[in-house]
Length: 189
Image 1: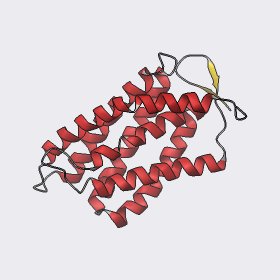
Image 2 (image 1 turned 90 degrees about the vertical axis):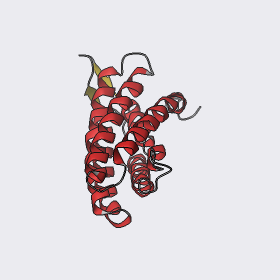
Image 3 (image 1 turned 90 degrees about the horizontal axis):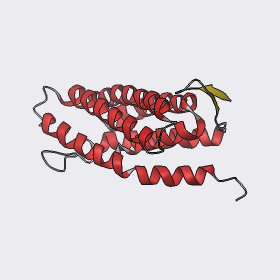
Image 4 (image 1 turned 30 degrees about the vertical axis):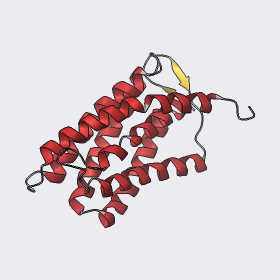
């Protein structure tokens, strides 16, 4: 599959098999649904458990984008969105599910677009910048939809959540690099 992105040059990306696609969607589903459950459990007035788990979704998206290209990453994001939204309605409140779905799709699509535009720069720039922008958008949309006018200390949760997401985003650079190094190896190596 040849995909143009970032620069004018065409790129070749690995084709994603059905099992790889299914695993990627399952990873998204686990991260998003788990985070929707965990965001309802505050650690303190500044942070919920969901702030620690959700940034892994950006790692999944960025690995997919690097390996399989933006079209495959978007496909996984849309399928992950649909699956997570359906499951989240049962394991979290409808308001949390709606906020999560809206924040997730907006932030993930921005992450994919920014990552693709920066992919030809230093290896760390695309996941760092796209993850930071995605985290800011995700956090603002999620907390304003999920908790505004509920009486919960959502503004402080939002600030604490964003701080944690940014810290986790930086810490995800090492696993991103390791995964890229391992995925770039020939299959028989």
